[in-house]
Image 1 (cartoon, rainbow, N blue to C red):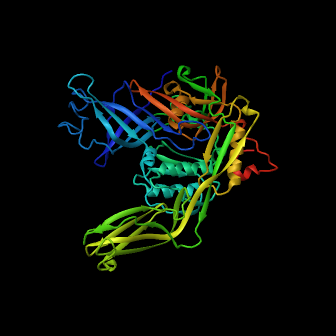
Image 2 (image 1 turned 90 degrees about the vertical axis):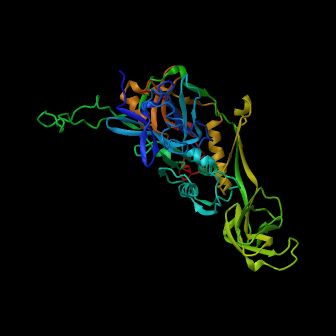
Image 3 (image 1 turned 90 degrees about the horizontal axis):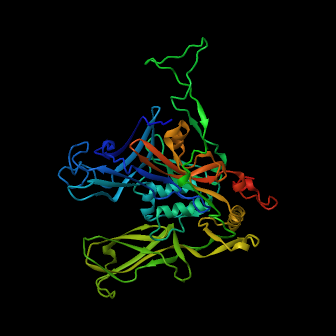
Length: 537
């Protein structure tokens, strides 16, 4: 049996309206995209930068009848079709619309082929929200106190120019005494996501939905312990009709029967496209774990000069200048220096001459400071020609020194070689917790495990597969069985790849993470209370 979607489309947002490109989307190659966390190891906790790629007919046989329709700058170009605009992909089944990708056409993401003969296509690439996070430099971030992961992520998002369409924040287990005090100059939003996810042992990624196609999702480390296998609807052709007591059927206004809301547990039994299925053994094996906890020192008083102007700056009356400076350890030795922004002050001086001779013009200078965790911004506005000879930022320094490492290893498991992984618990201030995470990870990874790296399936063969493709977004759970590899268990979908062909069929390939309790370490309960950490017993 071959099933087809009721409809699908790729749309771009132009002049406050969604414009469908479906009629001009090439079938070979068809649209292809990915989403979520694209690997399944203990370090893989943040969604990847993913891309929707497709090609458009750009010859005179496209839907507009105009060659160059998708060549920006061309006389016939579609007005408003440019980089940076939103683009989305959706599918419809049983009257429900599922948005599988949303993003912005990336810089250099529209590339028409040249020549009046040949294929005459335009290639388009669209980046997801996580690409925006990777490209966004955290701007004058301020230290935040006593925040869980679900409280810190909104602060990162608020710092960004591009916001996700929707959010879903699960509650974290740990409250971090300080966050963003390990944010260096040039640090990205995605880098902060990674620090938080590792410190919590949680996950942060984006998913599709039925409202717009982009939800930023945050998981605490025990979130998945409360997730059951997904219930998938039966398709309209497979659902039974609602039967009345007299054995008649409830008829709708159009004369059709009322379908029962029947569901089935997501269970994929030997339906994989095995030629391209990827199963690994020992891919993430690690018998030596190094967990890193930062060592911080905070000044007792807000009296330390954390930034000082390295050389005099010449200013012209009536012309403002904005300068930024990075905090430094006045005593040397710290790997990172940040500041407690709430207690910052500044000092400055200006003279007629660079060597601080001539008239003192400090009163003719207005300094507007903006204090960030890792750097300071000064807006300098003079009312006279002058040289600024002093410009200091003064406050409490936060100094991050060489971190404390916790090492767990298993000598027996190292007989075949030493395999190490290192994770940085940037916002964990308690080395006991880093110790616990290292111990836990060693228990999971010291011996080889089977991992399902890609599990390709054809969507259009059953309602199970159709709704599996539509509803099994990252973070959901299902059962997978494949006899030749011995795969038979419950797995979380970490991420997936998908491609469309012939204009109507889809192959989707989940990245799987085992949900079996055998994949969790059993801790020594005489030393640890597992429930306090959020891991299963």
